[in-house]
Image 1 (tube, rainbow, N blue to C red):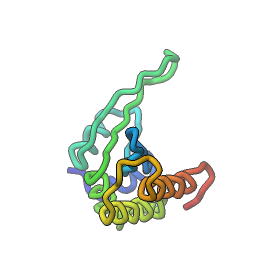
Image 2: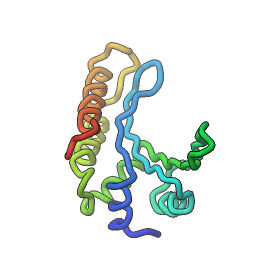
Image 3: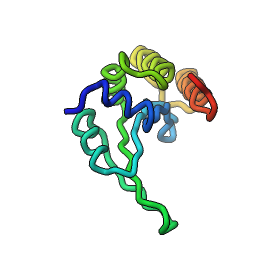
Image 4: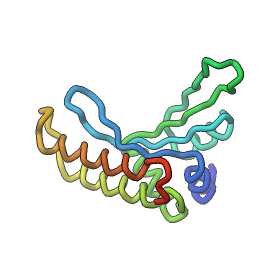
Length: 138
């Protein structure tokens, strides 16, 4: 198992945090992941944090294949909590993601597209998107 210090450093450099939307009822959920060209290192991360590893084949033969490890839901929350003390670059994004998880646990999402809960979930997504814009330091 990799140390949380190592995982946090790798996540700061190669990771991402998203609040994603799925389904017709537009449920929001936490999604984190790592992308890299080295499958072996991502398998080590997967054995420490879980998730699903996929190969991304590029159409241009000059580009190396890459891999993406995706972790969602409660597993993603646990991974962020474990890495949080050691995060630097993505600390503010991780804090927002954990606030989203706390909010989501306190409400049961309704199945109606225009419900306030779905709208609130999309507001969380917009907040994360703003933090993820290129050039943002936090």
